[in-house]
Length: 351
Image (tube, rainbow, N blue to C red; front, top):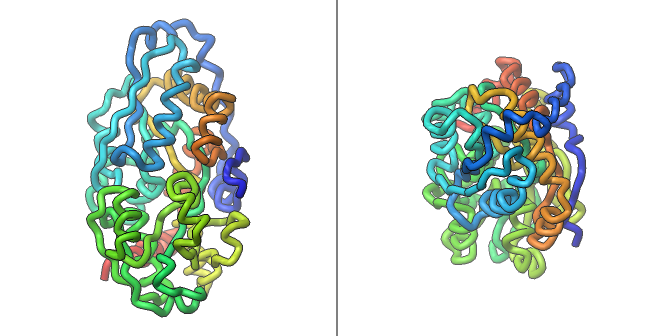
């Protein structure tokens, strides 16, 4: 099974997201600017993680922290802090309003969070287009998976059964994706919220508390539950993605279940999240030269042989998306047609 991937972000949603905007000019490498090195020398840079320790977001961030200081001018100390809450929304609110805006903190959080304001999620107190996007370690394939003992044999069987899904919190991907299947595509799933992190959902699935989970990424499954894949402990009828790895060739892309153009366009808008993968961003109003320095350092780590060896050992997918690309994707997201936004909002509403 090949799970270690290094590819450019070139999927259909990325092309859609960039189609009406000019190509981003690559920033000048700030590492040559002595003022940047002077600023960072002797300081600590924090990488925040919007989830508890032990999950895949945390694993990626800690691997990043091992090497990124070598590429930030001045070589500051780099620390990781976990800030769980509301499926990472609490951390993004903190990042936007409380964290220092001097380039000494950036963080990672759920790929769905940038779209939360657009889709009307309660508790969103930040403006996604004002964040300084640093980059993403990879684009993602999110699963709707069911435990093997449930006995799901086909997509049709999956969509017709009143299954119980677990989720982190209202508005998280683990809540949003089964809700979309209910509201937009006619499924009848029950959703139980309140599981703090990804590991809690996995344990609940194994114990039989829930029958399925959505929003779990293929890269996370490979990294944290390879024995489940080997032993066929779960089946994947549907994926929220624009592409499928060979191992999931029997799963349906969620867009294939759309019954008309508006449903398809709403799903494509929602799937913009998948291109964003595991995003990192700095607060608003960070000086541009420091944002550039963090972006170039982030890019360099994802090419570093030591990081790539660690990623391969931990079976972490690496398919970088640049900060400039993320900035444009978020801008395009907020230019979607009103009728498409409304259809997407209706798809995620709890009724």
